[in-house]
Image (cartoon, rainbow, N blue to C red; front, top):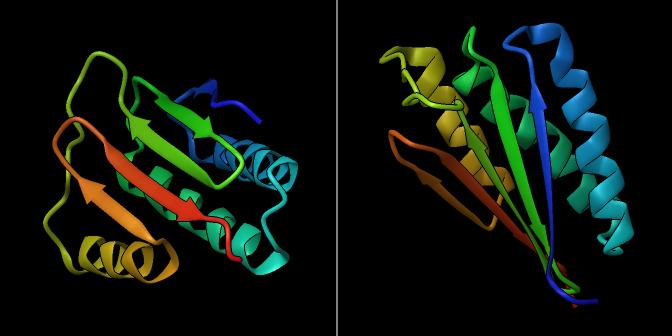
Length: 117
């Protein structure tokens, strides 16, 4: 499998996060991640979207190859407005636990998961 890129943009409403979860599961399944990895991704993408949710919407970029999936969550034409509270810290801890790599910047949240041998 070559490196493939997929982009999904949703309105900034929590009710659309389930669409992101389903899309993430489907993409992860296509690269043959095991069921535990897929479930970790579903929870992680929900958490990342909840952190980044904005009335301007959310853009999710997936970059996949045969060994990994990288998911970048951004707010189109804006910065992510991180709330400095306990729930944000919990969200960051959840993402760090579920994913192999996590990066938080004012421009994006980046999640990486590698296929297990």
